[in-house]
Length: 245
Image (cartoon, rainbow, N blue to C red; front, side, top):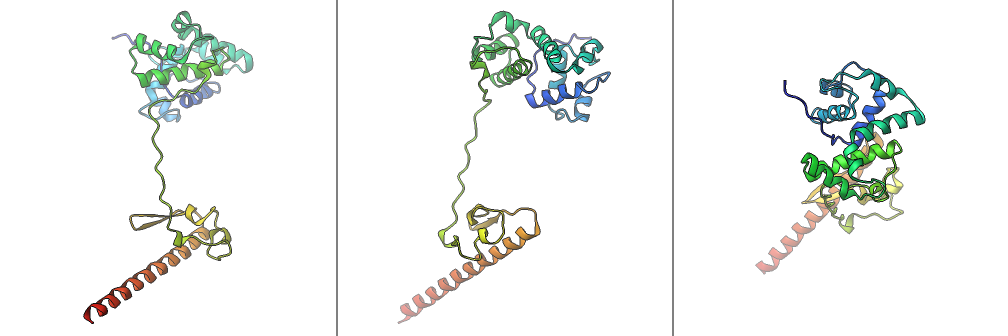
């Protein structure tokens, strides 16, 4: 049987928090990806990362069997639990602590460590760094100010600008059709009416009153649209008569 090589996990901090919280309340005999998914600790595609972390920290063995003497201490509370977890972290990540003084290190030091030693890609190394620093801060292991800064992963998406509704559909404060006077929980009519490519979108909350008010606003819009069409037809007729003359 091929030996399983341990490597640091790049699980998300939320999944790790939920897992360690669960293990503070119960001690299962075995933890595998099925256990992780069944207990809603991570999605099926990410479950292996939790298993990797627990192996890495020495909470389970390579076959997924829970190490009782370690797991039992996960039920400790307060400072005793923090000290125990800090010991697991320092032992598991001892290569980092030996190479870098994390009280003065910068974030790139830790990211480059994961890239060089474990051949992680930049994104994986960044997530692994975030997890390592989360564990350090959670269990009172002192780190530098630079390492306390949040780590961004990937390129942030640009937010699309919403098109503003035409001014003809804006309402005055005293108008009974103004949403602020209709009991609808919105700041202004523009908040829930949007025009895109001649299609009107109405955003409503899931209650009957809001739906009624939205229908009322829709009827106003339809009447305005009919008026525009009538005006356009009359203009075409006038133009036709003029040409005939």
